[in-house]
Image (tube, rainbow, N blue to C red):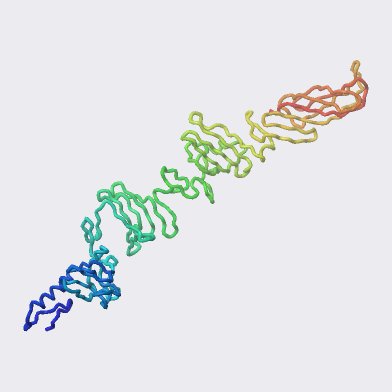
Length: 446
């Protein structure tokens, strides 16, 4: 039979041994030092000057005095008379009072902080009871996952694509929201009012990152309240064909950009006069009853019109936006309302004319009058000359004449004036040859 125990080397009492109490007491001293091992420190190199019975230390390398020569990690215990030393074995545990921490002995590393050890449990409950499914159960006002000097990640891993890895939010154990990988690899967010019927508010495709779901527009002109707009919503950012406007006269069209086309847009006849059957529409809204439409001809993009709607009167008439491309051109009107350019200027064989959108017209021409040889009492006059206006007036205009700067004085006198022509003759106090004069007719073209 061995004289010492296999693990702690405690001395056995031998059958024929005298003074058996000595052996028994030695074993008790070792047990007293090792059981519930609590040491004062593990970094003190010098023994205390007046040690107390039961003082224990874990010796560092290079210990001095009564501890000199002992290997690092040795347990030193004062028995009231002298220090006794015990070599630690792997797995021994001790509590270090100076550090308020537990340490564990490792043959390669020495005494190590026990908090660095890994722990594997079948279940863990913190103020709660774990079960076979919820193996970690925590009941507390809050749970803190802190960093260790840098960032922090919370990992949820699933076995296969068809499985679920998610965070489930509950009210009284009834589900209200869930986000994560639900039965696939797309990230989704679901909500429920009762824990039974669920709505997938958002889904982010793993392959493309594109977002869909009940909280996102179903189409570019989906005007459901509260939904997130997508690229190209209501025509903004659109790179392809614009959405066809359903009805040109509708008062409830959502704000945005549209196109109108013959055959696809109702009430297309309400477009401005002179505009083609194809074009662009911009709708802006002030409220449910007031909105503004701006229309641009796709075939003649230099022309653009707008109109406003009012709750009591509906749509007002179209008004044209005038630009550098439309100020000069052919003027026109419908019912006294201008429908063409602002100013029209042209000339022909009869002279030059200027027409304004408000109806004003000015005709100009240079005319050669005949010799002033016909006696008219004490003065002479020329035969009348008829000037056919380069553009017709709506009523007889005012005819104005002037004379050239000659040494012989003469003046011109208007004659009969109609919407298409006017007469003039020269007058002088003496007989003179023919003279050139400038004639101006001022009136209205409508």
